[in-house]
Amino acid sequence: MEAHARGRMIPLWLALPLASGAGLLLDAGFPDRGMWPLPFIGVGLLLVALIGRSAGGALLVGFVAGATFYLALIQWASLFLGPLPMGALVALQAALFALGCLLISLAYRWLPTSGANSHARYLVPSAIAGLWVLREMVASTWPYGGFSWGRLAMSQSESPFSDLLSWVGLSGVSFLMVSLVALVVEMLRSFSPARWGDAVVPALLAAVLVALPTWPMSSTGSMRVAAIQGNGPAGYFDDRDDGALLAAQYEATLPVLDRDLDVILWPEGSTDRSPLDDARTAAAFDRVSRQAGAPLIGWAVTERGGLTYNTQILWQQGSGAVDFYDKRHPVPFGEYVPDREFWRPFAPDLIDLVARDYTPGSADAVFTVDGVPTGINICFDIADDVVLRDSVLEGAQVIFSASNNADFGRTDQSAQQLAIARARAIELGRTVVNVSTVGLTAIIGPDGRTLAQLPWHEPGSIVAEVELFEGLTPAAAAGGWFELAAAGLGVGVLLMAWSSNGSARRRAESMAMRERA
Image (tube, rainbow, N blue to C red; front, side):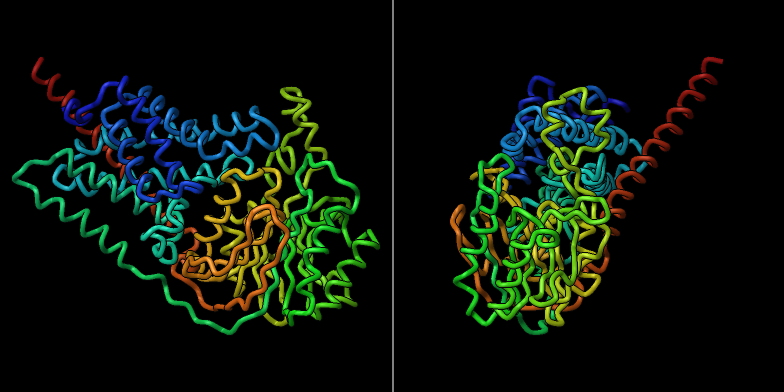
């Protein structure tokens, strides 16, 4: 019975190259390659490598796949603080990936002997997909707020499956992708010429998923937005004169000041000093707002109440700062050092590079711009489910996403971030204006189409009539319930299988004892 439960296990010498290849195929779905079918193949190879594995073998296979995937996906992280912090992040994510793979291997081992053999080919894929979502959920929130970059659904922002984001969100799409692949694997494991009709089930499921259109949204009008890419020396280690950032951003803004605007949007990293305590910066903000006849959504590092914040500021000429959004999810070891006293002895030079610690914001993520509720987020906030969803639940009719990508050069980071912004536009049913210091600045419609985009590392501006929307997609309305339901399904089925196997084992032992007696 145990041999049947484990299934046909491929040897470890073959499983490890398959795991490494799976990691590379998972990465290939993300920009800049953006080959969306390849993650499906990557998931399939990984599942095949996990079938029948022991706990140690599953952990090793999972770690190799996770390390390969994240090394390929976030190699840009080494440009900021070097290879050591990137290596630590990759190792942590690979360890979490390995734990998720261990659970998947246990599902393959236990479920066929759980008393549900006739339904295993449908139960197993759902359980495995739920466990995959569980791992993504944990990695996205732990430790120190987690690292949600690289969730499987993020590879599908421009695929035929992208419309599903508006129905079930990122976690739901990850669940459906893994379910579909795992179903194919189950069909192949039990394939025989007499059962060729079984292939209809995954084919029909794929057809239904692709055929679903984006959830229809109600338009409420439009607002005229100017998104400004200043291309100033905004990198953490850039050599710059005081005032160079503000000067570059202001110069790039001048050509649009007579364009009959409703709002001007500046990116994160676009000023040297805060307009709250620097007269020259405040004067520049006031001048832009006055000449445009519209509010400016600017940016600064602000000091308020003895704390330091990464802040978007709604600035109205004559009134100054009328609202603030402080970044809710500062990047650990990039924008602040958690438990600094503990970590500093391990790498004092690296830890000391992060000289100031941003405080996570607590204000709502909505500005009211000329009567229009507008969702606001900063850089890696775009990968945070809660921040984006909260702004829409609070009535935001458009989303403004400000970022500073100067530290990552011309790597995949900026394109990956824009792909996440595209996924959010579809998921939440809102136009997303993504503005960056150096690119990629773009406007994405709620159907995922790129409406306008600026080239990398050139100063410029986009002036566009941006459509506004109200109402909620099913993904926005359900919130995190899709994620919790999927993860709960995986854990629940696994626990029931464990319990059933334990009961069967005890019965077998009891019968053996009676026979010996």
